[in-house]
Length: 129
Image (cartoon, rainbow, N blue to C red):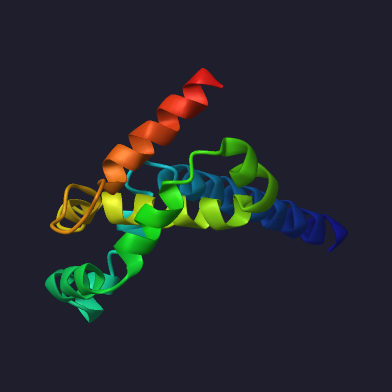
């Protein structure tokens, strides 16, 4: 009986190892370029993407993003607002993976500078620093 339980323990360990490796491969799959789109694609079944677009376009979300991205002081961003900017960039990333929502990051009416142009500016400043 001891040998059988040892074999069962070995099988359980092997099963645990294979589930660990499968979760590792799952993690690798989630790291692809469109991970947000894949991860949250079920949301489209709940709310049509056209309604999400209209809601975001009419809201203050894009002007708020524009306002924060105008701050070109990387030192200030890193010192006091890193958490905020991390989440702003995650939101922008989530918008950028959907073809219909990426339009919100481009030139819009009544907008001084597009989110895309502001990101390019921050990237340019970061590259120089």
